[in-house]
Length: 365
Ligand SMILES: [Zn+2]
View 1 (cartoon, rainbow, N blue to C red):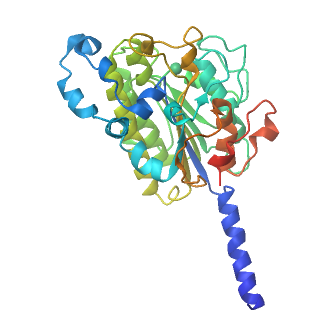
View 2 (view 1 turned 180 degrees about the vertical axis):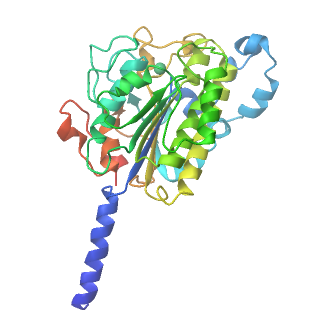
View 3 (view 1 turned 30 degrees about the horizontal axis):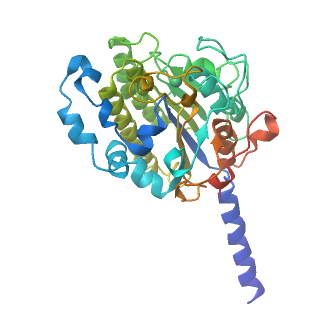
């Protein structure tokens, strides 16, 4: 082979290598849905819980049964989360199916929300974070660190349904980040008609939960912000799965999970239609904590429900080997998410935060 051909091939190899390591224009979207159980993700709806007593004021559940029940776990999970078990799985990998020999868990020892979000975004548990109080995170998150890296200034955004999400990220540390949570309005430049409508919807909707908006306007806010501002790193935290489960409303918990799957699809399809994101984006989908088992403990989680430490973690898109459902693999932990996320951007979070878990090696090309 001639020297010129070799030079061309080496050039291609170098470009390909740079893409695998993140390159100059890699992007990451991290989506979390609060307190969704690995059991529903991998097994689908639990028939024993899908009863009128566990829906709005004993509302009829026959439509929900048609929508979500089927003979096998594979069919049920496909009905509950068709995007996750379709496009996401075919272009990525999912950890946490304990029926298939894959454990994913939190390491923070608390198994509730603030410790879980903090572990996800910092890469380590912190004994000081022992409540869900709405206080600034004393730790630097990978988002705040990214916002100070070259090429990321003004390119990091975080949106949460739960008001506390803003303090978990800690806007004081996150320079030039867009951080908005709960019912707070988003101002951006240029401001759009769509964003004004979303701000109005949040301001004027019933506040069923005083510190947490419904997922729908929060998702639409994040999508509108991405459409206009095109940030490189986005964290979107949704909350209804946790709220409906705490309320004992299994029917609406399933509906909320199904809506989240629809948001993942719309997010992915929208990003693939935008040149700034198309084929440059990695999507991560995971949860802050698990919950207990049927018939009662599924409503709850925390230190008194030991199995609520089990979670799920999924990765898809650029830089992710399409391994599909992980079976009989070494356990992974929530503390590995931050370094894995940074790795998709070609950056080393472990060098900046010594306490952080290592990237999940098999999740990164
Ligand atoms: Zn939670």
